[in-house]
Length: 156
Image (cartoon, rainbow, N blue to C red; front, side, top):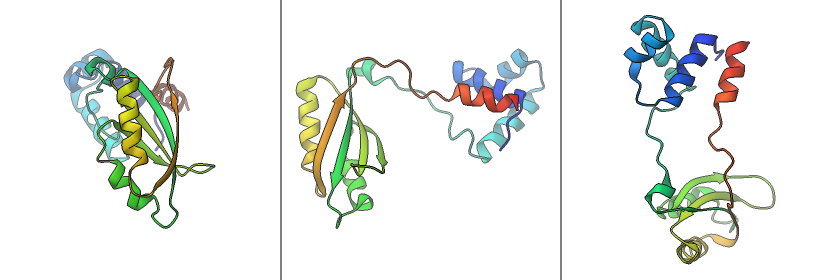
């Protein structure tokens, strides 16, 4: 889907201020409420806006440790068998099947390094997981960075 400047402005405003609502967005952007709602509906139907949801900060809930963990899995099990098992571990926030030297990549949060070891043990003891390799995040410079793409797409 091709974005225009109004689409980009709606996405940017609602990303920066998630609770703003359609009416206030229309006021700030100087367009009719129906225009904003129709554009938002169209963006959702096209899959550009996947969902409108609260963004939770695990660190503020007591999970300040972020770790990325590469997993090698038994080839006879496969990712479709292992993924539901790993999904049972609440500290796994993201899970991706990847190419390269590992088979899956997961993003894990933990309360402490001791707690991280508990989570990593649970991951490595999951049926189908052969080996894990993890990297602890020291500083996050940015994440979920999509607005520059939206702004660029809205210029074309």
